[in-house]
Length: 231
Image 1 (cartoon, rainbow, N blue to C red):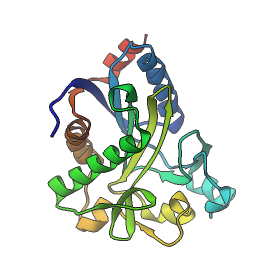
Image 2: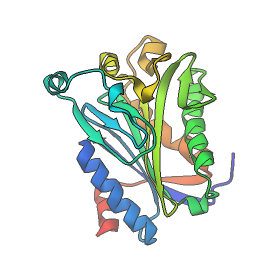
Image 3: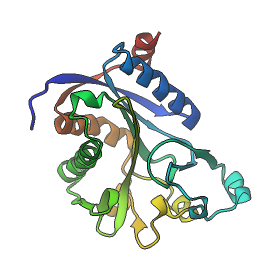
């Protein structure tokens, strides 16, 4: 474990709309670029949404617009890396907005560290052995993906991040080819353990592993304190 060399604030936001979270990320990224705020990790849930990344193909969305509307699933085209991804309740979303100038200016290393932080969490807290699969970004349990990762980096400031399947509605994944992959499945922590695991439980445990992996001291702040830094 690296000795903490800097600090990263983190905020537990609960459930937040995709639009609001996107706007908040942009505001934090701008403040981080101007050194008005420290590195910040947002932890939250989204209502059901499907997002298409920069390399996305709409053919990987299998459900019709009518079906998506009936299920209350909104569709967004975004600037993160990757293909088609589902987000919804029961999924822990992590958005690190950090300055990679302080972390080696290496995007591949950044993504690898996010993967390693999730692998460490699952192994040490839940005795679940997961791995990285060559050629497929994310975290895998055997042949099934448990965490998806898609990031954006501008002027070495990161946005977007990861989605860890804790206890989502797994039926919603049948509406897409997750990340454009057709020959592998998707799983969740609750499914693997055969018991319900809550988002709150995992969200409280995760910051420790992010801090250890990135060599930073984690400092929890409230949304009000965060907003005070932005204005």
